[in-house]
Length: 91
Image 1: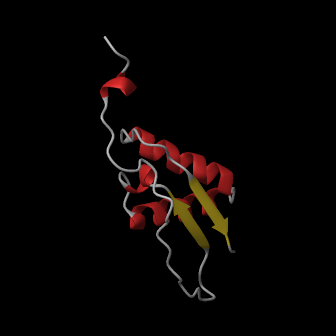
Image 2: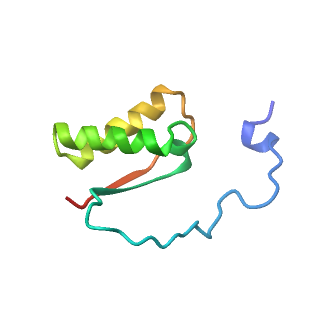
């Protein structure tokens, strides 16, 4: 039997090199910016992620721990995709 990668017939690009880009004006009340890959967004809604991060930052103020906890939450929901998360604390 052939390895899995030899049995899959890929069509088109596996990686898209043109990112989705949005220009958003940030007001003085913005606490943080949360950027993540679809490994997170396919399993956690943005409003839930924002509330979760806000709670994490209020508890301990550590963006690294908040990123890890949010990634774990997606894994707990059976995310099989890669999960990359960046939180920029603006407070």
